[in-house]
Image (cartoon, rainbow, N blue to C red; front, side, top):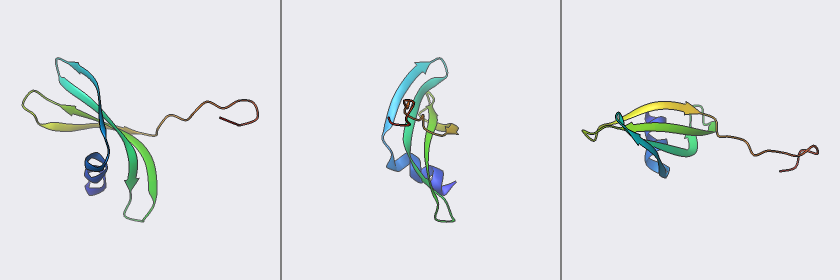
Length: 72
């Protein structure tokens, strides 16, 4: 949990949408594990009207499209 919170506080939050549930933010960065491994991730957070922030999900970042030769 500490690594997830560190990821959220170190990354730049990008506001993605607001609806009746609150405002969603996307944070892209590196998650540092207890085994010293680093993993590029994207997390989604929800800030409700009461200003509380909730973790929604974690996913890998989208990869850039490559051509037939494997070049970006």
